[in-house]
Amino acid sequence: MLEAVMIEHGDALVRLAFHYVKNKEVAKDMVQNAFIKCYEKLDTFRYDSSLRTWLYRITINQCKDYLKSWHYKQVSVKEAMEQTLRSAQVSIEENIIKGEEEEQFKQLIFSLPIKYREVIYLYYYESLSTPEISQVTGLKENTIKTRLRRAKAKLKVMFEEVGIYG
Image (cartoon, rainbow, N blue to C red; front, side, top):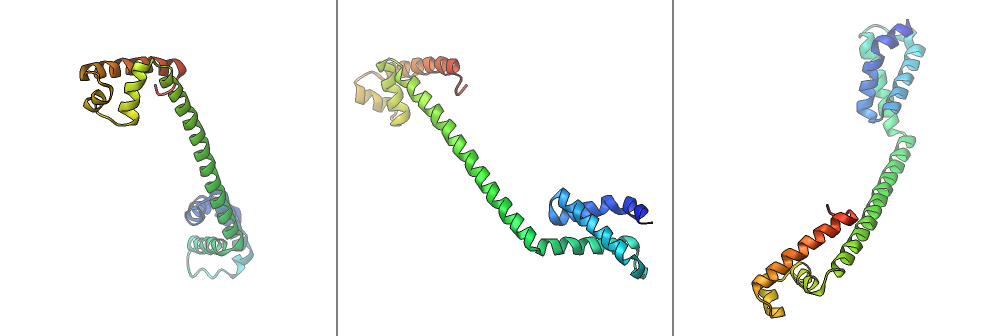
């Protein structure tokens, strides 16, 4: 009798429990506990409701008890802390990688001839416009634009060679 009940209602009860506990394995445990209670109390079942609704009520109560339990609260705190540590670790790793890429980027810029490095620095790092760079360097604007274009082309080739940003 109990085996037939488990086969008929098991999947639905696991889905119900999962909506409460948000963990598939814990949901299965809750349903298993519900079936144990069902087996223990089957002789007291009065058939005022259907067996299905009775099993739902037992499962819901199991889930609510679990969510109020000390164990659940400790596990939740532990999982939250682990998640925070994992995200911090990923963030640290990303920063290290980003720092290494930025260092490679700087080295590539410093490997450019001074006439290209100068305009790249003023344009991208100091955010000067081409007319402002022209005033600072005493070069014509068209010369600045040409040097910027050539510097970008050289950097693009170098970036592709080392495998960053493209």
